[in-house]
Every structure is written in structure tokens, then in C-alpha cells.
Image (cartoon, rainbow over the protein chains, first blue to last red):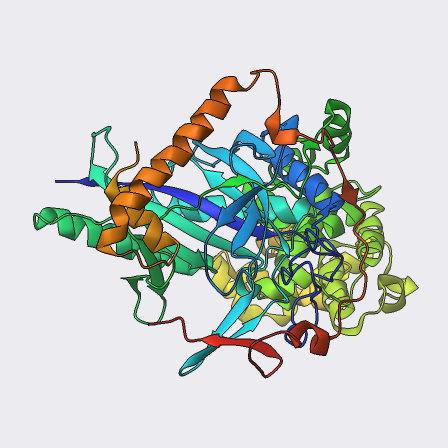
Length: 472
Length: 93
């Protein structure tokens, strides 16, 4: 029998605010243990939390960017559980009135992944388990999070991967989070079940907690899918439980230690007042949203004529998209800029992190200058390419690297001379060409390009060379 | 009505030990408390918003950092501490 995968995501995204959600301690990552703490975030009795305005704004931004409805009235609730990472023995979260509901993210196969809700909450502290005891650091306690919950709409691991990538990119574009999975500022829980293909009924699900890399998510989902299918095939039952994924052994195992009974006894936090979201404010935030990755990509394809694959590469990193847009200002052919970036510049930024940072020696303005020289017919593509390589290496501008005498086209008589020299100096290539090896002409064109310092028009040179050979 | 099973579940969640001889009495008391709450619910005016009794909204704070408390102060009342951290009994099995 064939089995279908059914999965849903809960994603925690750390918001890039300066301060924590309910107090004015810094949210900076790292720092000596317990040095970003105050009586509020370590939960001392008698302290009162006060909600950070920017947390509400960022959550609304995230909601709008994922097509959610923004609640008019929202509130905070206490989620009770007893574990040392929570000093108050409850987490302040949202239960029945989340800020955002009913959105979606569309995948490239056309399917919409429905977003059930996005709510705001506080992060927990960090535990370090030692032999016999546990160290608790509350620096992370109270750092603002949004939790983005989807419906069980995923039917494949590829869909899950695309969703996480898209979500990460959207959150980065709208500036609410850096979404660094390796630093924990974006973490995913996956609910996963299987059912016979064609069945409408959902199978028993398990939940894999706290995954912080897209490749782990994919591997964990594949492992868990196979494990559940094997259980069912061998007549056993899937038990509803919470699992931990171990990337070393590539297996999932049951997570114990946390409160077993899933009874959080939610109730309204009486210390925090109602959140009213005026419609005008929602519209203001909507109007301030930047162009989102999908829209940007489509614009590059439709308005600038960039091939879809290239447009996807250019929009995958905010800095690169910004660089590209600066570069093409006032130039005639955005495709040239795209090719320069994806072809030559990408060679100097190979890793994801390097592309993210996009720290290169050529400024967008300098590349713009180079492209203008091509547009104005002052230099040919070959010379532009070799100049860009030099620019990337030295950080110098095109105007410093190209001599005045290299500018402008090549005099036709000079080109004729060079082509004649190329034919006379390469009898073997000529013989090869006459014997049917059409590619042999390239060697002669190469000679012309080299001796004209890239100024010659390669296509014209090829024509002329063939003309000379045939005329002999 | 509250059942004995529910009493036992609440006891476990509250980390309380409840003896055999206490269950009946607790079940009865808990049922009394819940039916009293039902009485209040029935009496309540449906229009009243008990969720937001002070009728305040949007008490918000600007996102500006204020220096945190000195770590010695933070750890002052901790039962035990080590390496700048609160120290608790091992919770992993």
C-alpha cells in the first residue's frame, strides 16, 4: 500500500527588537549568563510585565506578509507548566485571541499552506545539564517570539523545505527577524502523520521538536515517515508523542522529562491589559511593507526580462537584490547586470553565509559605471568581463582599470589586419576548419581578441576570418 | 461532577501526594467549588466583560534598552548558584 505524508509546522521566530517582550533588558545574543536579566524576566513576585510596542508591530507585519487577518482585539494568556527554564512556572503567550489568524503561504507548485495563527510569546531560559545538576541562564528568558502555526497542509518533504525557506526569506525581507536557524532565532516543530493514499482520515501524529536546520527537518521527516509506515505495515500502532531528532544517528526518540500531561491550564494574564489594534494602524503597517520576495521575483521576470531561475537567485538574499537594483539604475540592460552578479560575482561569494553578508570589493555604483560603458558602446563585453574580474580582485573602479585608448570600437582596417594575421599565423586551425571542424575558427578569434585587448567585436571577427579562409 | 480520576490527575499535575482516605473528601469539596463557580456564571450579566475588568488597553512600552540588574543581585536569592547560573537539581533522566 502507498502512504501519504501529512505534516504541519509550528515555527518559532525570534523578533529582532532591542528589548525583551515584557521588560527593558537587552535581547542581544550571547553575553555572560544572567547578565541580561531583571526582576521582571526572572519572575520575582510583585513585578509587573509591560508589553513592548515593537513586538506587536512586528507580529502584525509578519501577519500581513503572510496574508493573515489581524485581530482587532487581542490579549495575553498564561500557559502553565513547571520546568526550570520558566522562572514563573508559566509562559506568557496567547491562547484564544492571537494577533494574527487565517493566512497562507503559496508554494511554487501552486498549493497554499494555510497559516492557522501567529501569536506572540516570551522565550524560555537556557538549561545546561551537568552530571547531577542543571545550570539555568535566563538571558534568553523573555526574548520576544512569534509562533507561526500552519494547518496540516504539507504532503511532501519538498513542500516543507520550500515553506521554511520562504518563511525565512519573508521574515528577513520585512525586517522582523534575522532567522538564523543555527543560532536558534528560528526553530521548527513538525507534526507528522501518515495515511493510506486516498484516505481522508488523519492518522495518529507525532511531534518532532525544536529543529534548527532545514536539512535536519528534511531528514527527520523522512525518517519519521518511514518509521510510521513500518509500524503500520507490521500491524502496530503509532503512539501520539513528542520526539527529539538526533542528527548524528539520524533517528527520532521519545522526549521525556517535560510535564507529561498536556494540560497547560491557560487563563488570561491579569497583569496585562487588552491589546486593541485600530484598523488605521493595520493599514499604515501594510502600506509600509517592503516588496516581498515573491513579488520582487515576478517583477524581475516580467518587467526586467530576467530568466526565472536567475530572478530566484537574485531575490534569495536581500542584500543581493538591493545591490542588483542599485546596479541597474539608469542602465539599458538589466540582464547584463544579472549575468555579472550570478556569473562572476557569485564566484567570490560561494557559501550561504557569504551570500548573506555579500561583502565584496565592488560597489553597486562601480558596477553601474561599468555597465554604462557597455551601454554607451565604449567597451565590448569581453573587456567588461575581464575588467570586472580585476575590479573584484583589486576593488578599483573600471575608469581606473581601462585606458582611454581601450575605449571605443576598433578601427575596421585594424580589425581586418588582425584577422588576416590570425589566419596566416594559424595554418593548422585553417586546415582543421576546412576539414569540417567549425570550432577551429574560435582559436583564430581568440588571437584577434587578445591582440586587440578585448576591443574587437568577436562575432564580426569570426565572420571576417571565415570570409578570409573561404576567399583563399 | 468531578470524578476521582480527575482529582488524581490534578494531584499529579500539582505534584501533591493524595492519600486513599483523602480522595472522597477532596472530590466532594472540588465539586462544591465548581458548582459555586457555576452559580456565579449563571448570575453574571452576559454583557459584562470580566476579561477586561479595568477596561484598560494598549499599555505599551517603547523598545528602549535599560541596563539590566547586576548579576550578583539577580542570584542573591537563589538557593544555589554556580558559573553565574542558577543551580537546580538535575531534571534530565
